[in-house]
Image (tube, rainbow, N blue to C red):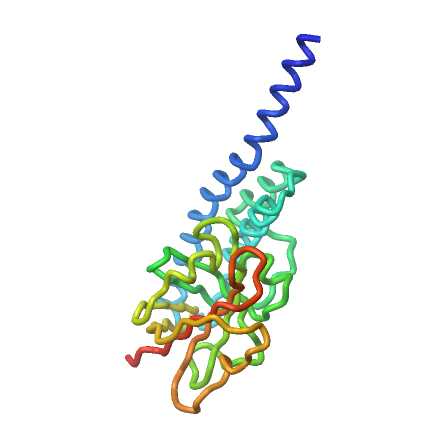
Length: 233
């Protein structure tokens, strides 16, 4: 009976520590994968004349697989096979096997210490990957019009658009692609109804970036909108 009690206690401790250890492991991988992405984009810029369409799929695949696993942990999943993660995520520093949509770049917001891959499309599947989804019906990144990007308002501090509400007027937002870098300055932050599509309007002159997430964080009923204009070079 005493041995059974000890086994139950140990099992309970392991269950408690499991998501913590997973998160620590993913945080380590996140730093490594982001470094790989930045290195790939840097090399792409250096060799733009010879390889204008440099492939950064592997780095993005690893980041997205990582964030998807963290998302599952946040939502109570405890059946993740650590050996499978290790095999898929450490063989070459990336993760394979997922049908990843087209990668468009990386979103940087220094004010809230955020780096997110930007994928083409804004479906639930894409947002569940922990990515920022580019709404295909909006303007391409960097062009005149209104570029709309959405992401989950994660419950974990600092993840996805969890801290987006901390942005203020004149804060900076950056987007980097394999071809060009863009800097935006925030000019508007507001809460709107879910069916208020006026935030996607364009004036035919400015290059606007619109970031969209849920509000409030718990049981959301509205949308938090942060808009920024591109800075002229």
